[in-house]
Length: 391
Ligand SMILES: [Zn+2]
Image (cartoon, rainbow, N blue to C red; front, side):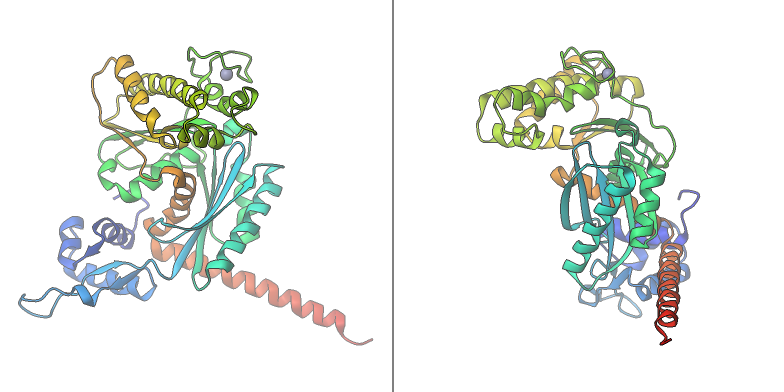
């Protein structure tokens, strides 16, 4: 249990990891007493975070039949904004982090304008799915690589949506999403390497996600043997090697626009030139992952982002290049389970973080913000009425 994690949060996370959980299973996993678990489950059910599953009741035991519980994914939702270099992803997720709706907009304009536009899309998505209460939101990005401000983005998202809002580095967010569903990755050290149009690394020790505002290190200018021109003036930086795939494909006439997703689509459709570009990128990425792994020596590596997941033929090239380069022998390497939804799932997990750490505090904070907004609106409309009084 981490420092800021409540007992209710521990129970909620334990149920999430079990799927459907009986109270004695929760007791075994958490070491909490039956009385404590009974109280916590009752209050979490009352607040719409857990629901009972009478259809899964266990019989044949002494005493009352035992009714298990699961995370209630029908009532609440979280808002997720991921700012990428070219594309900003806006999504709604349920309490299990499943994506309920997603929209994309071009990453354009200053932090406040961009996040306001994203928040409007979020509100539109929410209106479209109906019936769920939005309880939290988050905005994540490779802040340093894009020269953007998490403080301005977070404040704008909170003021536009009136929701409790969190911010995080985008790779830390990938780690948070992974840990929600793969609790076994919380033991020991897990290194996450992300690549789409930017690259990034986050390392998690015993389940503790690098917190927002803490510097996470950078692999943007890690040298590779590619000849990609980087904004720093050098050639071959890893960030440039990944970021220039779209422009290179467009310059070569492989795709119409410098959009890396079009390059993935072309390769999947059998375009040989697109295939070669992506295989070349995979080779550089695999070697970079080996260098990162050898520096940090984690217990496992998780690869996330479309540069790893969008073109399956490249995955074996990444692993081959890794094996040829590492000096430390084999290590478990997995691809992120989220595939193309990784940006939405990552930002959603950061929004849900406070809910899973301390659900009662998170919902109380939400209620206070809703109440404050209502009061402000009421006083505004009251002053409008005053002004509309006949002269
Ligand atoms: Zn560079």
